[in-house]
Amino acid sequence: MKLHLSTPSNKLLQNNIQITGSKSESNRSLLLQALYPNINIENLSNSDDAEVMQKGLKIDNGVVDIHHAGTAMRFLTGFFASQEGKEVTLTGSQRMTERPVKVLVEALQNLGAEISYEKNEGYPPIHIKGKNIEENKVSLPANISSQYISSLLLIAPSLKNGLELELVGKITSVPYIKMTLALLAQIGVENTFEGNTIKVSPKPNVESTNLVVESDWSSASYYYSIAALSEVGSEITLSAYKSNSLQGDSVLQELYTEFGVETQFEGNTVVLKKVENPKEQKVQFDLSNAPDIAQTIAVTCFGLGMECHLTGLHTLKIKETDRLEALHTELSKLGANITVTDKELTLSLSEAMNAEVAIDTYNDHRMAMAFAPLAMKIPLYVNDAEVVSKSYPDFWKDLEKLDFQVKTV
Ligand SMILES: O=C(O)C1=C[C@@H](OP(=O)(O)O)[C@@H](O)[C@H](O)C1
Ligand SMILES: C=C(OP(=O)(O)O)C(=O)O
Image (tube, rainbow, N blue to C red):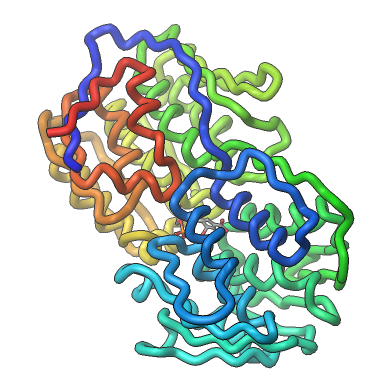
């Protein structure tokens, strides 16, 4: 599906958007619910990734295909490895077979798990024969993906002896690890995270608990971008959010003040207000704790005609696509002056902003959603726009609520 996006000349916005539950919180909660059936989940994400996770958790034997869902791939690896009696082949999309799992597989093997590679060493598809895991200490590199660590932590309380992890190297995407530990605490699992060591106590049973998933902050980023590109005086309200979020991407509240967007909480609704035009011509952010909003921020800066230097982007190369290359290609098509390395992105002042460009999305939901706000400045096309369903199936419908003209072409 190819879409054409444009916006009316009046860029003063006002509307309320209800965003689906966080896919990160949802996929963690679903795994915990599979281990402890008396957990109840509210505001579950309606994303493809949460759907494949739900389906995957119900399979005992055979092939489990998790499509593009990185969290499902990594979390289910830990889950099946620790489930005696289950035996599966875990696989996904073509891209998923290029996203590494070696660090996680080796950690699980060191704990006694039985996992083998079906094609290329270090990558899905993998064959898992579930076992009772009794070893309880392992160390693993922490600078490639935090999802490996979360996967181990999520199964940790169900293991006979709990788990102690030693994280080696610089820890990346830390808020996602803390989110996992916070959810464990919510179901009564004792845990500590001191220095490079995480300890999780065993917990055979959990009392009946309600986990309320907060709406997705990564999805909120596209509205922050729209607000930044709108006229002073615009207001967008998003629900349902918590001021004490578990999601690291809630750092948007601070970052977007650089673009003149202020955030206020009214109960469980956040109000984004464009209060002024940006004061500085350039921003500099380290996004190692919030990698999923890098694309949004790069496009916001380009739309505002600002320079930016984004660092801490080393994980972007192994996500749904190589996001650094994809940003380089697509922003260049629009006329941006952009350079990327394997962990940084620099946007210098651009001469042009080309209209009616067709943005390629590379099977990456965030490429489609990050570029959409640019329609506030120039009409553009988005190729394969259905990719948004990975995390936010209602995205295009919701944009129409903000007077975006979204036409299938
Ligand atoms: O644990 C999670 O829910 C996630 C962790 C992050 O991945 P990395 O730790 O690989 O950066 C993030 O990019 C991804 O969208 C979701
Ligand atoms: C990287 C992402 O997801 P995952 O790694 O779970 O596929 C994302 O949603 O931006």
